[in-house]
Image (cartoon, rainbow over all chains, first blue to last red; front, side, top):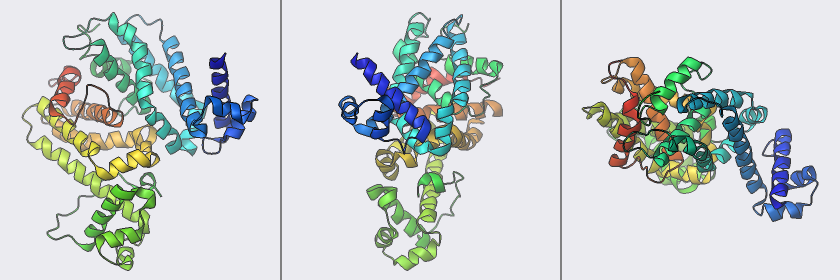
Length: 190
Length: 206
């Protein structure tokens, strides 16, 4: 029940951010949007607006990675899973209206929350990768922990910037995964 | 006024000055002030006092005021860090040595930079736009152009460009968001990342 109300408040905050942006959203707006009192918002988020913004960014990021996990669930092997994840994430970030609007209007406000919560994003991706790594044949000296840490960071880096790669091109993505993601991790390339 | 609005990532290579000119003294003073008080609170008065010159002298040297001064500080520091890193490339005899030395030196320069540390801790909004999306792309491109010619000693040029960007990603990730068990400022830890994750994915003879 309490978890539901917390989610409800985060959902309300997200709606406010989508409408007014992060800078202009107030605790008052969130309370009105969620149909609850300001006091209730503060009970769940004692840190007020700053905590609401930070937790909403993390909440939306979690939803993003849930969608990513669902979209890649049928992948035949680990390399294919990572390819699908990169293709999906790159496309989804480009199509994410609220994210794109924030990047246009208040990139610093958004990105400082995203990077302050960066370790949470790394943990999210690691948790998603862990079961796949447990059943993979890892090269000597590589552990599920170290591989997960490395791959999560590579994934985040490529979601943030594709650099000289074209992440809409499946052949390039396959090449990228085979070399920079997995060459050091898997015992034998698939 | 923030770094993000003013800094250009193309380092101008300043001519080595035997004695610091007044411009250099003002830039050095501004760097000290930013380390102490941050970007927002540093004033041209503070800088003048630190540089032991008059406010008028600061304005004469930087007619663009604080924005122009901060831009000069940023360009100067980018050039200095770039020179420190590329200086370490020169002594490397193998691809592994070059990547290790470059990563470790860059990590030490970034993590132990007093002004950068202050801004990251207290004014992150001035620096984070460089970490992803439009400016993140620019930063990766800059790092690539810096390191690729040196990596080209051991790799074909396309592969060298790829390796340079890859190393920049690893550097930024572990500096921005530290991990337990990886400390790139430590040579042994940097070497372990290089030999475990990077080298197997690079093809010297491709």
